[in-house]
Length: 194
Image (cartoon, rainbow, N blue to C red; front, side, top):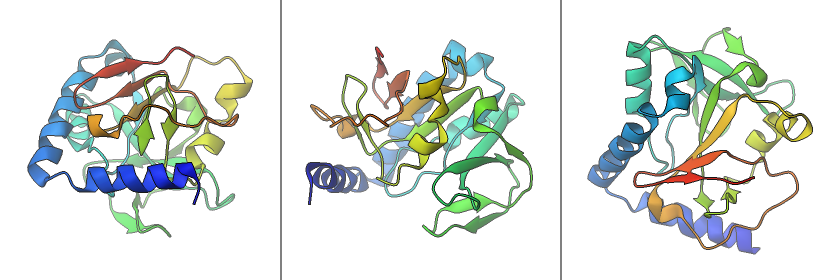
C-alpha cells in the first residue's frame, strides 16, 4: 500500500466518524461561506455533488441556489469514456439511478460541457494548505478538467470542499493533478497560489 492509499484510508475513516450533528453543523458553516462569495454570486451554472462516504454536504447550498434561479448540475460517469465525467442538470424533483459505484446520478438528457460551467465544487479526501489535494483515486475530475492545464481559461472556477479535519501536512502531487483556485472547509477558506 502506498502513502496515498494509506492517507486516503485514514482521512476517509476520520470523516466517517463525524456524527450527524457534526456533519450538519459543518455543512452549514461551509455553505454560509460559499453563498456570500462573489464568485458564487456571479455564477449561473454550478456543478455540485451528492455527499457520500462522510463527504461534507453541499445540499443546503443547492436549496439556496435553486431559490436564486441558478442552474445546478451533478457529475455523472461518462458512458463513452468510462473514465471521465459529464454534468447533468439537477432539479429539486430530479429522479436518480445509481452508477457503478452506487452513487446516485440524475436521470435526464439535459447536460452541460465541463468548459461551459461557471463554478465546480467537488469533494476532497485530503488537502494541504499549498493546494495539494487527494480524491478517491479514480482520476475522474483530473481527466475531465485536464483542459484547464492546456489552455489559460477563466472558467470554470474549481473549488474543493472538505471538513477541516481533512487537512494534512502535505499531499503528494502528480503532474496530472488539476489545480484548484480555493479549498473551502466548514471553518476556513484556503486561497491556492498556483
